[in-house]
Image (cartoon, rainbow, N blue to C red; front, side, top):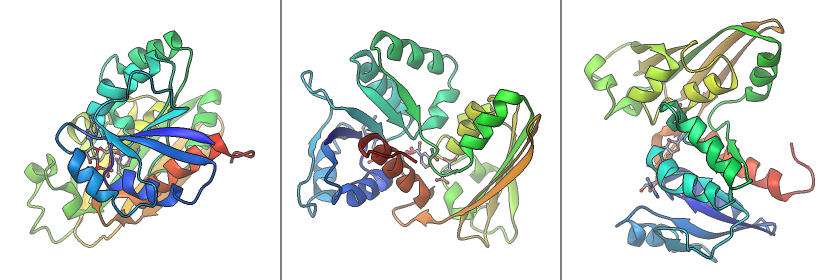
Length: 267
Ligand SMILES: NC(=O)C1=CN([C@@H]2O[C@H](COP(=O)(O)OP(=O)(O)OC[C@H]3O[C@@H](n4cnc5c(N)ncnc54)[C@H](O)[C@@H]3O)[C@@H](O)[C@H]2O)C=CC1
Ligand SMILES: O=C([O-])CC(=O)C(=O)O
């Protein structure tokens, strides 16, 4: 049995816990919530057969086998870095956080000191295995387009690029590097950051973001060219009801990764 601590219990966290409830090889003992949200999180977990304990920090004597971050960029600094220092292996979904200058190096150093590892999860996108293998032979270009329903861009700089409530056709709200996309759209550019880290890096991965009033899906499309040849992938993800910015595949990606750590065969 693998003992897990989960950071954050919003749309992804609850979805993951629901799917893990019947897996006898995985047990989420603790959920770490942000200060002041513990009561709300306990309420969210009230219907679970064996709800995890809700805390705001990992107890000093706790030694989970894995810590999985499903919270947001701030949680990397607050919880993932200290856990790595303590030798706890970490899985993260808020990969866009790694666009912050120096954070990748700090995570590496913390993991080395703790003699442990950090795993960046593919989340809402696929093909990361092929892209990172292609990188070995050398990549020439990676272009990514993220297209989401107009409502998914609420409370982002997309509101300044167009009137999200009244656009009648698909509208480009951002074009630029993955680094800039991740900085401006932290909750919508995790995929751009993941593709960059697997491929050509944050400065050479070209990103286009589109608000589409006619779409009900989060569409992630990328094309990669290099010594290996060329491939493109288009993933039409269904958004989670609880958070339209987040694709349901992200939940399944977390469950898959945890299962791969616990089960005899990993795929
Ligand atoms: N890699 C990928 O493809 C994707 C990554 N994400 C990332 O996953 C994160 C979570 O997504 P959702 O569950 O949809 O968001 P959400 O907003 O529904 O839930 C996040 C939860 O984490 C909690 N939280 C935030 N900061 C925290 C902290 N420092 N410590 C403890 N708890 C904290 C919040 O209170 C909230 O309950 C997003 O912020 C995004 O960065 C989301 C979608 C795809
Ligand atoms: O589709 C998703 O779940 C989220 C997304 O676009 C991103 O963070 O890049």
